[in-house]
Image (tube, rainbow, N blue to C red):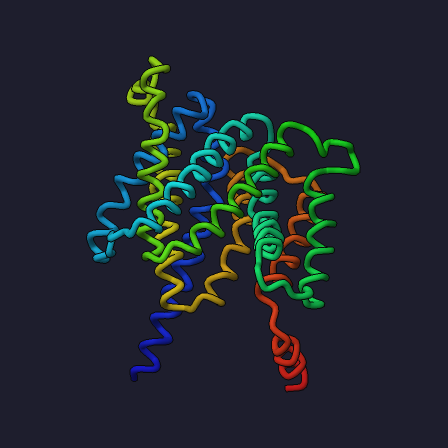
Length: 307
């Protein structure tokens, strides 16, 4: 009975994880719509503000410990700087091109950059495993496709900014791994500190409060970006780690490139290119080989075929 209950709980959280990935993917076209209303810095400030406000009841209901030591505080300040930089670049770049393509580019290249940075900074250097080398090679090919190198668009502002975003988010991820508090607390603090970082825009901008005059579409998109994606989606992901395990949980973000493309198609009418689809698929295989592959996976596949 207890085993069945645990299995049901795991299925529920697996379903919730898929929903969280849909929230993450749909934030790309929603963010592009937000940038059509006002500047990137104003959207960034309000995104962090509403995300922090939405995180308060989550922290209270789940009784998350928010206690910080000085080391964690310094790391959170650093991660918030990365978060703030990522967000403004992200909103700015969305004005330059496809939200779906940007979503595939960043979400697939970030894990590859994270692996490379972690490997270079690691004190205990080891030779990459065969699956990691294969994953890196596929990642390079995927990058060539996603950056549209065959058409010489590699150094367009859109590509350059989103590559910087991917590197920035990879650094942020590595920093957050070293913060020894609950991940939901990290998310809440990052939203708060990043919001504080953008408070000076009230001095230099006279239209920060104009958002309260915008139409329903703006508020629906802001709800998707700040509350569904940043506050709720991220919290579901972190809680899912506790219920389905870190290994299984880390496979769910592989859905984000596809949910970004699908939501961009339905919300914005964007049709992805063949290169984007091919590059995104290769990148997902590369992420699997670098971060998730275990030798017994192949043995399990052959065993199923024999049965």
